Amino acid sequence: MSFSFDTILHNFPYLLAAARWTLLISLSGMAISLVWGIFLCAGRMSKGHLLSNGAALYISFFRGVPLLVQLLMFYYMLPYIGIDLPAVQAAILAVGMCSAAYTAEILRGALMAIPAGQSEAAHALGMSSLSLWKRILVPQAIRISMPSLVNELILLVKVSSLASVVGIGELTRISQNIAGETYRPLEIYLAAAVIYFVINWILSIGGRLIERKLQVG
Amino acid sequence: MELDLFVRYGPALLSGFGVTILCWLVGSLGGLVFGFSLACLNRWGPRPLGWLIYAYVEVIRGTPFMIQLFILYYGGPYIGLVLEPVEAGILSFILYGSPYFAEIFRSGFNAVPQGQIEAARCVGLSEKRILWRIILPQMLVPITAPLTNFFIILTKETAILSVVTVPELLYETQTMAAETFSFVEPFLALSLFYWLMVLGANWLGKRVEARVTRHLRRA
Image (cartoon, rainbow over all chains, first blue to last red; front, side):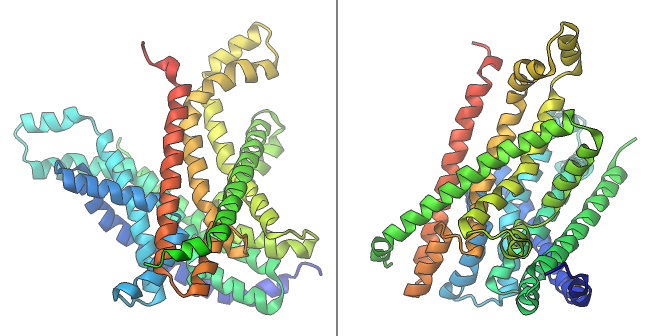
C-alpha cells in the first residue's frame, strides 16, 4: 500500500474538530493546575508543619504515580466514593490535580530564586507584607517561572492524549477510530502528530513572546 | 478489601513488573546511548546532519508519546516493520527518550569552558581524547541531576505501553480488575507501588549525584 494523502485530506476536518477537545482538556487542566498549584505552593511554604508536610506529601504522590494510573483511578474510583463525574470532567480534574503538583514546585522554585535580601530591604523600608508580595515578589516570580509554566502547558497538551484511554473523543481517540475505519493508521497518526506538533509549536512561540514582553530593560 | 486477589494474581503481577523493568531498563539505556550519539553527531558532525537532528528532537518532543507508539506499532506494518508489543514498546522508548537525553548531553557539552578545549587542542590532544579526558568527566557534574530526573520520568512512562498490550504492570492490573470487577484495591495498590518505585529511584539518584559531586565539597 502506498502512502495516501487523500485519506489525510479527507479526514483532516474531523481531526481538527477533535483537537478542540485536546485544547479544552489541556487549557482547563492548566487553569485548575494554576489555581490549585498556588494554594499548594502557599501550603508547602507555610510555617505550619501539618500544612507544609501535607502539601509535600500531595506533591510527592502526584509526581510519583504515572498520570495514566491517576486517570484510571479518577475514572474508576470516583464513582465508588459517590462522585459521578462525566469522563471529560474526571479527566480534566485528574490532569489538573496532577499538574498542580508540578506547578506548585515551579512557583516555589521561582519564589525561592528571589534574593531574601529584597524582602528584608522591603521590611526595613516599612513596606507592608501585601505590597511586598504585590510589588516585589509576584511580578518577579511570574517572570522567572514563565518558561517553566509554558513548558508545563505544552506537556499538558501532550498528556491530554492519555484521556483517549477512558474513551474521551479527543485527538488521539478520534485518530484511533478513523485509523480503525480506514485501515490507514500510518497516515492518520502522522496527521495527528502534525496537529499536536503545530499546537505545541504555536504555544512555544507564544511563550517566547510573553517572556520577551516580561523582560526588563 | 479483597486482598486474596493479589495472591491469586501474584504471578501475573510479578511478570508484569518484570516487563515494566525490562522495557524501562533496555529502553532508557538504549535512549541514553542513542541520545549521546545524537549529541556527538550534532557537535562534531556536518552541518546538515545537525539540522536533521534538530528537527528530530523538536518533532519527538512536540508530539505525545502515545501517538509515537501508535505510529510505530500500528503504522509500522504498513512499511514492513512488524513488531511484537514488547519490541515496539522498547523501540519506541528508545526513540522517545533519545532527544531528551541528547539535549541533556548538549547542555553538558556547553557547560565545559571553551578555553579548556582550545587549550587541549593547543597541547595537541586529539578530539577523541578531549571528549573522554576533558569534556566527559567535567560534564558529569551538571548532567547527573537532569539524567536521573529523566530516568525517573521514564519509569512512569512505561505505564503508557499498556495501551498497545505490552503485558507490563498496568496492563496486568487492568486485566485483574476487569476479570474480578474490583477496581479500587488494584488501582490503589498500583499507585502506591509506582509511588514507592519513584521514591526509591529518586533516593538512588540522590546517592549517585552525591557520589559524582563529592570532589566539590570541602572535607
